[in-house]
Image 1 (cartoon, helix red, strand yellow):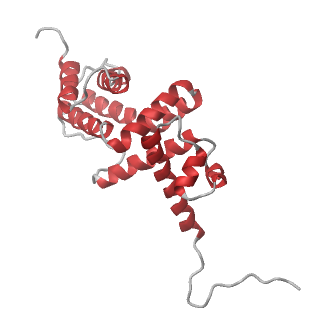
Image 2 (cartoon, one colour):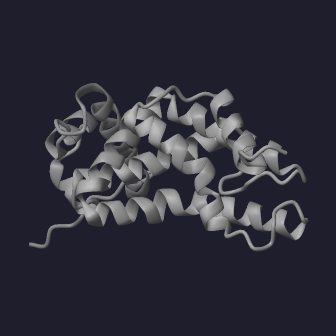
Length: 212
């Protein structure tokens, strides 16, 4: 005797597997980010994430190959949500015609993000793991860093077109005057990071150190 599949009761919608998967994915993101903050990256495990999210670990392994992959995707999602909450358009760079003001605005927002407890622990975890895990490091650059670096390059090239930056300047090198000192301070705790600090970076980079 053939077994017939049960049909949804009249008037009751069938379960939406897409919504169920999205709910599980969101729970996994939240669990991964929360555990990294609470216990640190080394003690965060797939099993711990699964238990916290209320899913089986096979569910996680179906979508990701490692906890690093989970954390990276969760962090990217967090960044997108933060951008939406702020009412900003993702992957854009202000161009008011005032290069210094635009750079200062973006760097101030970066400082705020780096000091946000939601971002700090996962950011540091990914940065540290990317140093010892070459594959993760490459993905970190491609997915997290390069889109932002491209925006800096585009804004500096626009400034070159406007005659605000010398035409022979390489934008890819020039952006390191802003990015690298901030990253070093943040990663190695060599000094405080603040709006005043990044404003000064912009002033030093654009005006140089020699007497005028």
